[in-house]
Length: 128
Image (cartoon, rainbow, N blue to C red; front, side):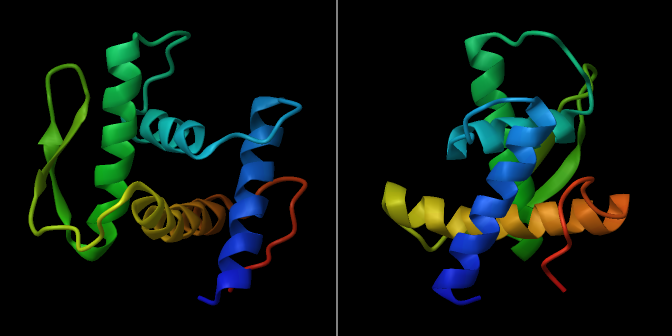
């Protein structure tokens, strides 16, 4: 994926999330990770503690990195929380580099959701 494609798809996903939440501002990277974590948890809860929010972002990162077998899903605990184990080291260091690396997986995750759900209402399909 070329840089311009990554930028375009990232902005498109931020708009999808913004619209889904009924917000006026585009979400930041951490908000998108949080929402992926909530999606993966599968439990709708009106509020989460600060620790649970961090755990949800961790779940999102593990889920995203499972695409290329950096993490492996091992199951859910008694409360329904997904758990992963590290399989191999992530080859990226530095916050900016890690965010760019993860954005590619976020795009893939949303593309998969889009295919699974038949598209996002109000947004044209732009990826093949």
